[in-house]
Image (cartoon, rainbow, N blue to C red; front, side, top):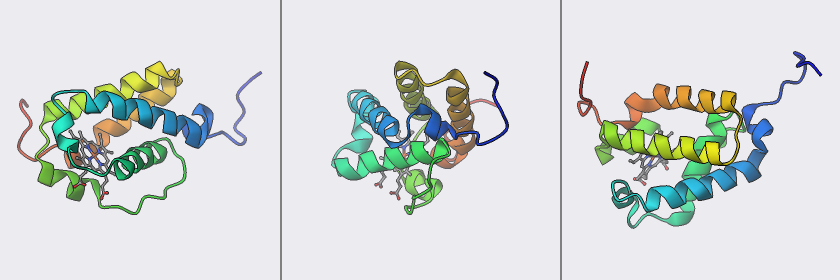
Length: 131
Ligand code: HEM
């Protein structure tokens, strides 16, 4: 069978929609919270809200319905002072989870590109090394 130009499913649909995103969020959250470098960011945060944040993040990134009504990424993250290294750790956890769930390589690649695009909003200004 060949791929046609008609009704191309979104990445979100291809990986299994809301159920797949939920599974990814669970795994991602489990990894981040036991990472000693990252756990502190999430201390005291409402767990339900946090899971929702991750689910919304993934859904939008994967081309699913955009139901996000929260703050902009810069507004939410700049006050946290996140260094580049922590950003990369979070991205690494996300990519590892996608691999673990068998998400197709092209979808993973898309997520990787988007992570690069939002980096400047999430990482604290001036914390980057190099260049
Ligand atoms: C990689 C790209 C990232 C995206 C797309 C993203 C997305 C989001 C979103 C949508 C929110 C909710 C904002 C709101 O409710 O107003 C949020 C909050 C949060 N994010 Fe991220 N995030 C990313 C990376 C990170 C990283 C690297 C860290 C920590 C190392 C982090 C830690 C947090 C924390 C602690 C909150 C809660 C902030 C608060 O409630 O004040 N995020 N993020």
